[in-house]
Length: 84
Image 1 (spheres, rainbow, N blue to C red):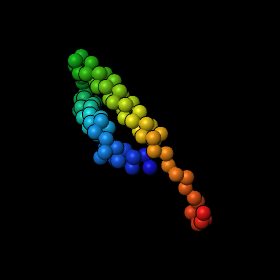
Image 2 (cartoon, one colour):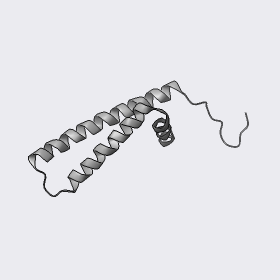
Image 3 (cartoon, rainbow, N blue to C red):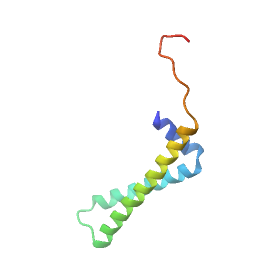
Image 4 (cartoon, rainbow, N blue to C red):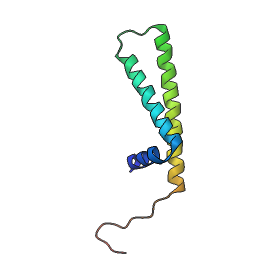
């Protein structure tokens, strides 16, 4: 259910789409750094900085998700096999 909402937001919300793209690029760069056997001081600093930025982006994405769920509450569902 949450994945459906994420896909919907990627398609319809420009800010969420931008954040998702940024999150993906930060994640890719982190994987590049983690694949190295040794990190220079600059790379270690970059890794810490990337992790902080990625977390900030994810927090903003979660905030948008929560706002969207609050704005569009779901109708209660009826159990399968029972008619209303």
